[in-house]
Amino acid sequence: MTLISPSAADLGGRTALVTGAAGGIGRACALRLAAAGAKVRAVDRDAEGLAALHEEAAGRPGSVETLLLDLTDLDAAEQAAAGTDILVNNAGLQLVRPIEDFPPDVFSTVLRVMLEAPFRLIRGALPHMYGQGWGRIVNISSVHGLRASPYKSAYVSAKHGLEGLSKTAALEGAPHGVTSNCLCPGYVRTPLVERQIADQAAAHGIAPERVVTEILLADSAVKRLVEPAEVAELAAYLCTEQASFITGASLTMDGGWTAH
Image 1 (cartoon, rainbow, N blue to C red):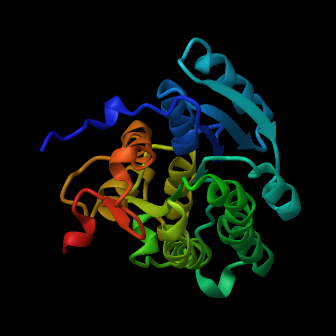
Image 2: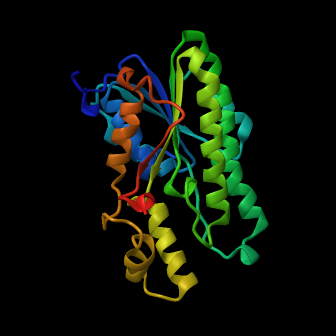
Image 3: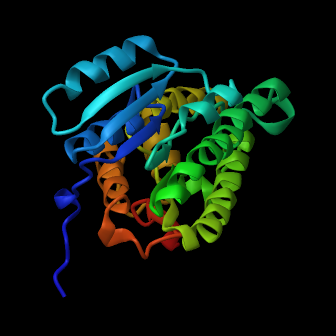
C-alpha cells in the first residue's frame, strides 16, 4: 500500500470555512487549505488580522475571502456556513480563574463561541454536504477536551462538549459521506496561549517562563510548544479523500501528555 503524504492534499474546487482565522491555528489552517487549492472563507472578528491574512494568501492555488463576524451572533454563524464543503471550527477564547472567581457571563460567552457556535455552523453546513454526499468537519479541540486542568472551567467544559458534538456529527454524517473529527493539540504557539501564560503567572504567583516549563509542559514528553502549521497540516489531511475512513476520532498532538 502506498501512503499519501498530507502535503499532497488536493482540495481544488472545494469551499472551506475556517473560524478564528485571523491568527494562530485558524490562520495556519486557512493558508494551508488555500495552498491545497481550496476556496477559503476566513471568519473572525479581527478586521486587521483578516486583512493581513488575505494579503499573505495571495498567489496560492486557492483563495481566501474574509468575513468579519462575531460568533456570538449564532444566526449569522449558521448562515455563513451554508454551501461549504469543509468546516474548520477553530475560534476560541480563554480565561484562567478559580471556579469561585470565574465570571458567569464569561463562562456563558466561552460556551457560546466554542460550543454553541460550532453546533450552529455544523447545522448550517450539513444540508449542502449531505446534498452532494461529501463533507469534512474538523473541530479544533484540545488536550483539554480529553483532560481537565484547574482554573479553566469554561474552556475545559466547552472542549469536552465539542468532543461530544463532533462524535454525534460523525455518526449522523457517515451515511452521507461526511466525516467529523477533533484535533487535540497540546499548547500551541498562539496569541491565546501567550495570554494564558500571563494569566497563569498571575494565578500561581510565578514568573511567566516558569509557567511554560513547570505548568504547561510539565506532563509533555516533548518539551516544546506545538507550531500552528503542524496542526494545520493534520487538518488538511483530514480533508482529503485518503482520510475518508477517519471519523468520530480525537487525534492528539500533545507531545505525549495523554500517554501518562
